[in-house]
Length: 266
Length: 289
Image (cartoon, rainbow over all chains, first blue to last red; front, side, top):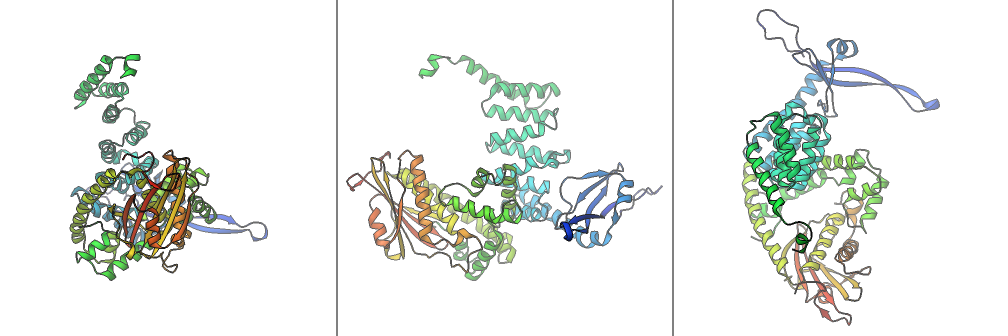
C-alpha cells in the first residue's frame, strides 16, 4: 500500500498511496418510511514530496477520476480508513489498464497510426471519462485526421475540465491550441487560449499564440496588442520579431487602402 | 473501385468473412447509442422528453441535441458532456472487428488505408459531378433531406454511388413519391425507390425512431426537403408523400436530376423533376442551366 523511502541513511516516513474509505450516513424516504442508510465512499490518496495528500474519488470503474482535493496526513488518517484489498484487487489493475491504454495510444499517435490511437484513447476514456491526457490525445488525433467536427466535441470537453490546464499538462494544451489554429479553427483556438489566459496571465508563449491566431484571423490591431504583451515578458522571444514584422506590414497595407465612399464603390 | 462501405470492402478483400462482418455490425449496434439513450442513461433527460424531441425531429430538420436545448430540456454544458460521452462510447466497425479479434491491428491499418484512399478519390468525383449537374442545388437539397431522414429514423447510412444514372427500376422493390408546389413556379417532384426493406423490429434497438417504416421515413424526408426549399427561397407548400410502384416513382420524376444511392443494406434511386404551372417538365427555378 505504501512505498518505502529510497534514502539509504535515514529512513523517512513512507509516503501514503492507496485507497481510503469513509462511511457516510444519509436518510432516504419520508414519514414512516424514512430510514438511515450508510454508504462507503472510496478515495484514492497519494502523498507528494511536500507532505500534501491529493485525494480523488473513485468512479464506478474503480479509477480515481476528476480534480484532486488536498488534505493533510492528519486529516486523512483521522477521517478515513485504509482499504488495501480494494486498492490491490480493483483500483490498481484499473489504473494500470488506463495508463497502458493511454501510453499505447500516445505511441500510436506519434507513429501516425491514428485509427489505433483513437481506439486506445477511447478505451482509456471509457474507464475514466475525465482523463486529461487521453482527452487531449483524442482531440489531437481528430485534429490530425482533419475531423474538425469531432475535435470540436473534444474541445468543448477540454474547456470544461478545470484540471486540464494544470502546469503538468502544459505541453499538451500548447500542442492542442497550435493544432486548432493550424486546422483553421480560429474561434475555438481563441476561446481555448483565453480560457488558459484567465488562469495564467504572464505566459509569453501563450500571449504569442493568441497574437498569432488573431493575426491569422486578420485582426491585426489586437494581434499587435498581444504580441507587445508577450515581448514585454520576454523581449528575446523567438519568432516574435517575424510575427511583428508581418503584423506591421498588414497594418501598413490597410492604412494605405482608400477609405469611405471610394472603398464602398469597388 | 466503386463507392462502398468499409465492411463490404473488407469482405471483398478477404480480410474478414460475411459472418464476422455480421457479428461486428451487431456489436456496433449494441455499443453505439443515440444521444437520447445516453441522456436517459445519465439522468439528463427523461424518456418522455426524449420522445418529445423525436416527435419534433419528424418535422424539424435539426440535430437531437439542438432541439432538446431549444426546448429547455438541457443546457449547452450538459449537451457538450453528452456528446462527449456518446463519442467515447461510439465504436467504428473496425474497432468492433479488433475487439472481436477478427482482424489484427496491422492488417486493419493496411486495409483501412487502402479503403480510405479509394473512397477519398470517389468523394471528389461525386462532388464534381454534382457541381456539374444543371439542377444541382435542388438535387443537393433532396439528397440532404433523404440522407438525414434515413439516418435519423431508419438507421440507414446512405452514400451517393452515381450521379445522373440510376439503373432501371427492375432491382427496386418499393417506391415513394414526394411532391410540393412552389408558389407561382410550378412544383418539385421527388421519386424514391429502394431494394431493401426497413429493419425488422426484432433487430431494431429499443429506440422509437428505428422502427419507422420507409413510408414514414419518406414523409420525414418530404418535410426536410420542404424546409430546404424554403431556405432556398422557393416558398414551397407542405409536401405530399405517398407509396408508389418503383416504376411509377421513377416515371413521375424522370428527366431531371437523378442519383443512385447505396447503403450497407441495399440501393436506392432518387429522381428529381420540376414541373411548370401547366404540369410540364421544366428546368428547376433559380438553378444554373
